[in-house]
Image 1 (cartoon, helix red, strand yellow):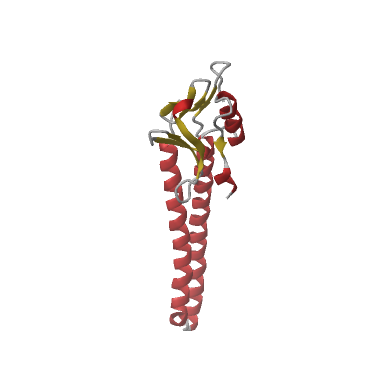
Image 2: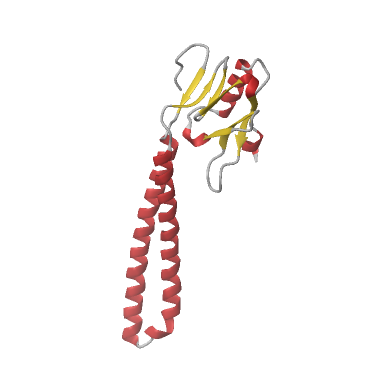
Length: 177
């Protein structure tokens, strides 16, 4: 959080939470690859041992199911990793949120307090973090995901109430659901 002036709250974009998710998904992907290799080695060993006994063909469907489960887990993990990497590339730069006596800025859009219809938390798209959404009286909206900023939602609410003279706060109800 950076204060450029005493009379406003300026919150820059912070990619650290998204980076943590990317790192976590990278570790999971490595773990799934290791798990798949171990599964292949074990199934290959069991197959060779059973083939030596003349019973290898009986268990082939079981081997395929076990191998399929490992491959599906790996595929899901790779998709989650790629989504996190794409999200990190899309994290903005500069000021994400600015609250001050003249008005509010969320993302690239700003509005004077008299032009603000609402400021509140909204559900993110499927699998994404909730977003801070600014809705203007002309119907325009702008939003910033909470995982791209490093300030608590309650801090934004307090600042909005203070700077708007009590006319607006940040509706945080969606965060409780």
